[in-house]
Image (cartoon, rainbow, N blue to C red; front, side, top):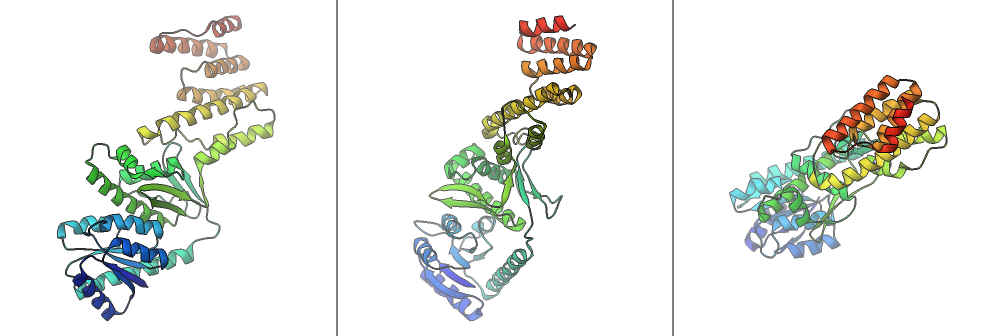
Length: 374
C-alpha cells in the first residue's frame, strides 16, 4: 500500500517517515507540510493511506479529511495529534486510527496491523458480493434497507442523528446541500463549531455503515456541500412516483399494475421519524397516494366489487377522515352491498365528526343523495 504524510512540523514528519521506512510495510509516495499540498498530490497520484496531522494552519486535518474523501472515498486516514483530548474525537471522526505524538514504534505497529486487517476485509467483501443481489431503500413509514441476499438483515444506525442525516441527503436525491443547511436542520440548538464537528463525525459513521453493508451508495463532499448518490439500488419513493397515475382506470390489467405501485406505500413518508423538514414531501406523497387509491376504489365499484372497494376506502379514511370524496365512495359501497344500516351509521358518524372537529356539515348534494337512498 502507498501512503503520504501530512504534518506542518518538519521534525515530526521526518520522524514518522523514518519509522515507516524501517517497518517496510508501506511505500511512502509523498510527504508535505500543508494539507493543500497533500491534496494536490492526491489529485495527481492515488494513495491508499494518509497520515494526517490534526492541528495545522490554513486547513486542519478534520477539514482536509472531507476533501480527501471527495477525491477518493477509499483512502484510509490515520490522524496524528499532539493533544490527548483530541484523540478520541479524531478517532470518532473519519479515521482508521489515531497516533499521539511522539509516535512510537510499538504504537505505529498496531496501526499498521489495523490497516492490513481492513485491507483484507475489503477484499473479502468485494469477492463475496453476489451478482444477483437486489438492494432497496425504503422510506414509506420508516427508513429501512432491504437486501434480497440476506432477508431480515437490519442496518443498525450508530445514532439517531446518523439516520436523520442520511434521510436528509436521500430526501434531496443527488442534489448538493450546504453543510450549514444540514447543521441548521439537524442540530439547530448547537453552537456552530460543535454542530459542524458532529456533522463530520456523523458522515464518517454513515460512510462506514454503507461500506460494511456493501451498498453502492456514496456520500460525496465538495465546496462545503454534501450529496448522496446511488447506483443499482432501488428507492421505493422513486418507484412510486414513476408508476403513479391519477387518471381513471379503464381495464383490469391497468388496475393490477396500479396495485403494485400502491403496495409500495406502506405508510406516510418517513412517518415514524417525525422530521419537520420532511413534512411538505410527506403531505405531497400522501395526497398522490390518496388520489391514485381513489381511482382504484372507483374502478372496483364500477366493476361490481363493492366489498373490495369498501375495505380499501375504510383504510383511506383513517388517513384522511374529513375527505368528502372518500366518504361519498364509502356510502356508495354500502349502497351497492345493500347494507343500508351500515350506510346510515357511517354517514351519521361522518356528520358528527365534521361538526365536532370542523364546525361544518356535509355538502347539500351528498346529504340529498343519502336521504334519497335511505
